[in-house]
Image (tube, rainbow, N blue to C red):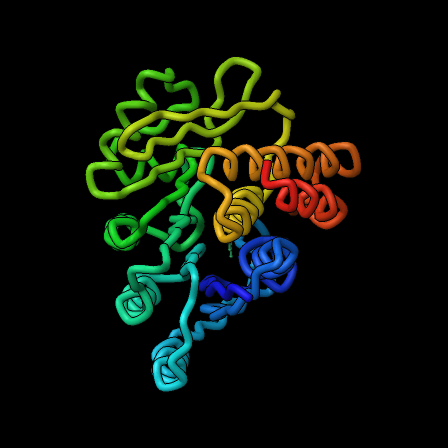
Length: 274
Ligand code: PXL
């Protein structure tokens, strides 16, 4: 059985990061090892959340796993709480990256043109350094702007996004920018050094925390099943879109996606590999 490792926080309530990655990647039939980097009472969309930094455990876990000679088919990182954690994750990747696995970095640090609480310019630079260790990165449009040092706006043209993808792919094999709005459509555009790919669905007029995590986790589940990148992107977008639709119909103001009831849909798509 394939095993991947995902390194991100546990938001005890909030439906993001590990509480999303574990069930979704497991549903794809992939053993999901975890390193929780921080325990928060909720995601940072709530006020007064608690924040327990588990950084000091990361090198100890790494050392133990090296001794056990564990191998991972993929390394997937998401939200990291501070620059120290990014450094520790870089060290972990250097220890466990090999020629048979791949590294997926979701530089989860911002949305809607704004950094998440607690992050600053120094954090962005460090996250950029981590992205350069990735084989594939999946920033949303805000994060892509931060990585490139350009001003965020909602309505970049397709041509402008292609320039951004080109620039990011100078240092990274595969780049996927999410949360791109074109008219009444929303979706992703990607570049693998050879071809651009895009996939859009009709926009649902709501945004939910953790949508990027549902997307990245379902993408990783597909890629780990040897589904090619473009098909994986389609499945991940369709699944995320189904979750957003379900959530919107149920509670427009939900704090996270209803990703659970659509898991059978996702499994079905993974099984069909399309
Ligand atoms: O979904 C990204 C994410 C992950 N973890 C925490 C967050 C967020 C987004 O806000 O706050 C703690």
